[in-house]
Image (cartoon, rainbow, N blue to C red):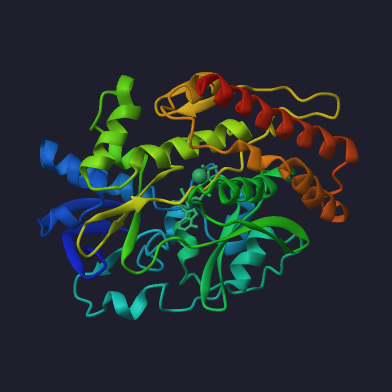
Length: 391
Ligand SMILES: Nc1ncnc2c1ncn2[C@@H]1O[C@H](COP(=O)(O)OP(=O)(O)OP(=O)(O)O)[C@@H](O)[C@H]1O
Ligand SMILES: [Mg+2]
């Protein structure tokens, strides 16, 4: 099928897409490479032929093979692979404005995008989160849920005309949603720009809920795309900041530092390169800002918890490396701007939050106590670092 890759109203390129193998077999014409996904534009500048990269990028828009409980979801959707979903809704997403348009179609962005047009979210939410599912449900596949990334079960919903992302815990673990809320609490207290997560209950399960931080005029470009073939891997942190500054992003260093301070406090193990990035205007291609901090759920040692002890992992991701949190925090230049005393009441507030949902989570008092003690010790540890650096 001949298609045009669009970025909102701009034609990027014309290509042949083979639905059977979910891949592009030929690029027929480049129209406007500047409006291509950043990773494709860079590959194009390097070697011209981006057919394979285009296929890879498009496949990467789909639900990943490592999505929690993927087989169950696929059987409920009555499809055999996530790739089958890719062109069901033009490949549209709520994290950017790319889509594929059949070559002979008159359809326009304004007719189909999911920012303006509602989609049925109840059925997909059910298919994702419920224990009892009616297999006779005919789910509408015209939805942005065909193109969500990440390991955790998730679904886009609409409430009061706002698009929210619901995200569960991993397998039987229920801390991720609470950690997202904790991250929001810390960011609000310390004045960091963040995506605002709250707790919601769906099909009797605890999930996190956050509003979409992209709108019709913007796209998320992750650090992975920004850095791909564009930096010395050994110096990626400084190069990343420089790239952002050179593209007009204000206070880039401070904002990146804020994210790593949050990760230090939370022992967030999962700040990989697709868990932060920038927001770009899709009409002007102007870089607007650092994306508000998102996906901080893999924190407070939730992988290594057992009832007896909390094993402090102590390592986080730092660009292309895994480093101890103590090493990561050393990259921060100015500690004087963090008023950590404001976090004094946080362990108690988090304790209250965990107790509030205890009837649903069945989290033991002992576990809640350990988690909040760990949080308290992280805050104190950070306080000490600040004091030492401000001497
Ligand atoms: N509020 C949002 N608005 C727009 N896009 C979002 C939002 N939150 C997440 N995304 C997009 O969805 C992707 C998946 O979300 P998220 O990273 O929270 O999921 P995850 O399953 O926890 O990921 P991981 O595999 O890193 O653990 C993000 O990488 C980002 O591209
Ligand atoms: Mg993620």
